Length: 485
Image (cartoon, rainbow, N blue to C red; front, side):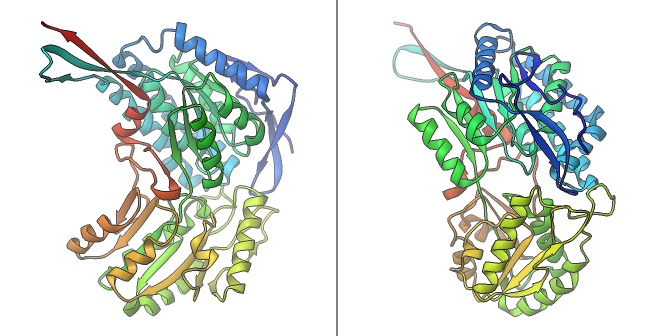
């Protein structure tokens, strides 16, 4: 069944106006829980992207936004936060429909996190001040922070609302204008947010939304000379390409890329709490979480015990219709993501893995479901351990010493997140310091807040989202030196 999406309806948002793509192209949006078309949206081409960038440039150069005080911009962003909360039910329903997320998680996690991010950045907007510097020059020296200009925000399919907010909120707080290209598979909340931003008082042209494919709309946005900064979240392969294009033009970049986090369970861990964190770490968002914990490293003395607990517990995790309140794990976001998981599990079997539980599709309403899967017995150099699967698959490996645990945790090319389960506070701090990751969680998983920065090292990218660090990345510093001689 095809329906019409109300915001636009499903059109591009450019210069404060809803419009069709220049060539009239549209693309289907699929409900991953059924595999059925639920609506269509405009598919932007290069001409549409150029129009959006020109609208953003006009708004930055000649509009009021960049010239407002941080306090005034903050008031608008605070109103955005209020509108997100007022429209939480509809946003949660859209996110669940678009991505396949369980509705029970969409409101408290996705929607309220986005509201919190705009609220936090509304407060941060007032902190963009400079500093005086003591020098021996016989001069009065000070610095000023200002916006960069037009920001290209390219976001992925797995957390559309959260990951767009983590870019738009700080970019707007700093006085920039934005062209946002959401993932072609999950554009609905981005279009809905364009309406809320306009309603909150964000001037026309300050935020523009172009829906379309990565190879066409995304590439056009990357290469547009009117862009002053790129903020990208996505796979390492695409991020490497995007960073190289931006690098050719010497444009600043924030890259939040792939992950393959290790979750380390020491022998002194509280196993009851650890199991809950372990399961959350690999099934949350059906494993489509760059900061998920798909690699479980367990002290050998508790390895068999923990594996037995997982064998009993994981099959009991409720998998099903994302609109059902009891569902914890929904479908994969699309057919290609499901096929990728299937291919990795088949590869694991060939590499000698023992499938502890799961390991197959779940046939349900024509949707893209895969059973949460636990794999044991793989060597550390296997592809299934070394590469990012991006699905509800957990590999389990034993270790004998703390040094071995750290070496295994740091053995992949990724470094986005990691976790530790221990009751030894000294060990927790010691190991956290040694783990190569942008964020380390201790005795839980996925504890995220707009005040706490996250981002990657190694092939997981560079730059930080959230916190004052994110706001600073959307600004440029100017020094002024006044002679007093």
